[in-house]
Amino acid sequence: YVWPVRGGQSGSFYNLTISKAGTGSGSITATGCTLSWSGNTGTCRASANTSITLHGAAAAGSTWNGWSGGTGSAVVCNGTGDCTFTLGQNSWVTGTFDAVSVTGVCGSANGGVFSAAPSSNLCASGAASAITDSGTAWNWTCYGQNGGRDAACCAVKLNYSCTPSVTISVSNEGVGYNPLPRYRNEVTLKNSIALWYDVQNFQSVSTCRERFLILNAPVLGVNWSYLTAQGQWAPLPQDLGQITPFGCLSDNGRFTIYSGDLPVGDYDLYIGVDTVADGHLNLYDNALVYDHLMLHVVK
Image 1 (cartoon, one colour):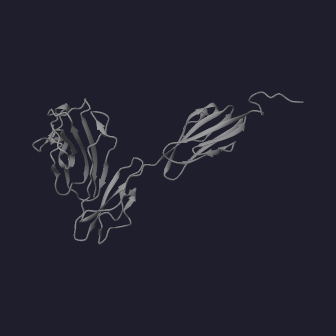
Image 2 (cartoon, one colour):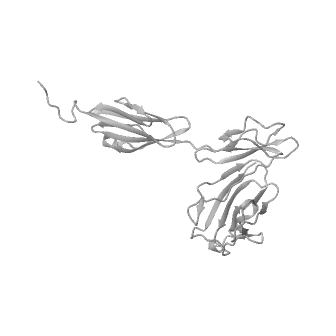
Image 3 (spheres, rainbow, N blue to C red):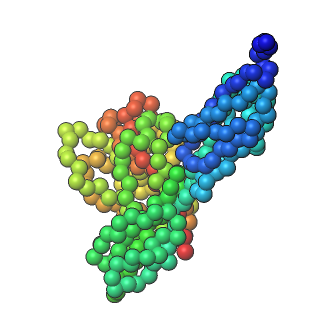
């Protein structure tokens, strides 16, 4: 004799699908059914009315950001805690892991004096770049990861001094008034440095591509000011369109912002190029491209 079984009773089975998302890594486990993983997708099949509990655990260097996108019986899954539900239909849910941001920090070799290029203790955190030889010092960068800022580092050759160099380029990172540049170019330096604006190796163009430089450096007594063609700092006007350029892009050369050792403190620089040569800053017609440097000088 064959007994009929209604849907939802012991004769019914449902599928549970779990997806991993995000920049990080980790594990998702289930009680009540055994997950089978293929890449970032896990599946299991269980009988109706089975109690399922899902648990997410981040791997080292990642964080667990919880559940999202639940459908079917897993619609109740949210937040970062374990998710428990009764499986009554085919269900899906996503668990997200994100990589932890790492800030680049120079290691103990930074600022040291060596007879040969250092090969250890380059970075306390972050990933070390290749070492370059400036003739008087060895320079390298400790790269931040997952959005963390970089750190410029150097080691002194015997009988020389150490001056790290930070270079950014004017590129299409910010256009017009918004959005802000994609990259903050945030750098922390532990060594004494001078600060200059250096333009070189640009091809001549038939019209002037106007250059702009804005600086906020309270420790220098310069509070949100722009560089004039006379080499003076002028306070930013309320109407930023009144800012005047200090030169053309094809005018190769160097302008010293501060000579000697920069005081400990924070510095913001905005470097821009305006393709409309009309003697003032154009914010709203996509003529302006600019870049941003956040410089932290520490002891």
